[in-house]
Length: 296
Image 1 (cartoon, helix red, strand yellow):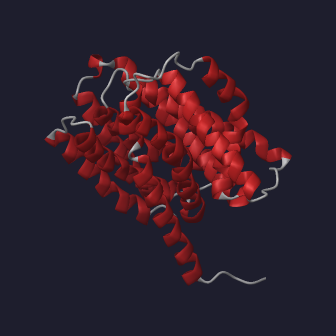
Image 2: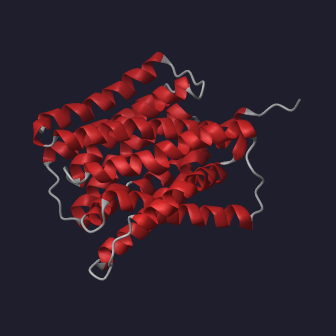
């Protein structure tokens, strides 16, 4: 049997971190874009229509490249992926953004690496070293400490919804990454989107607004972004990166997402980004290097 050289293995992990980084950059625009979209679209309709648009594109890609159907044992994991990242996370965040700003909600994304790492152990069979958990938990505590300092009583519903979104998303990430090792990165998200089509297409048609004449261009562009990039293209890079570099390890790149997201929230939505928010984000980013070093 031919052995994989250390150099080859290192190259694969490096590719995983590069792909994961690209995915995080794409995902960073999701919450600001969702925030813009829910100002004019109903959050439930937004969740359904973005999944329907991405699902039809995914179906077209699968047909174009003549991909074979998943094996019988792969359908349940695909359903979990669909529940976590196609329906659960978009719906919960869209509902949360009715109560909190995108800048505030982005801070909770700092919890995603820890949630993803936990599900990487439970579902992916990974075993990071103990010091890894120290850095991962420290980053999450910094994020949560900042959130509590802002006063959760101001919008408890939005914060609870964001926490639930993080949990279902972490499960969807870990399950999809595990499946990507055998099915392929872009194939996983495309099939998960196709699984959701029988539900999201009729419901999106039923809940469609009676008139779209008053919908502004920024709202349409935001819908296009969350449908094409957040729901499809971002996952192509993200699942490939997780499969190549390790779910728990590459998952720590999500600690960078608040930084990019806060910049977008300030630039596009003119939301105030406090000094404390920036300091917490920088401190959390510092945990990535430590977690990466002890992930294996």
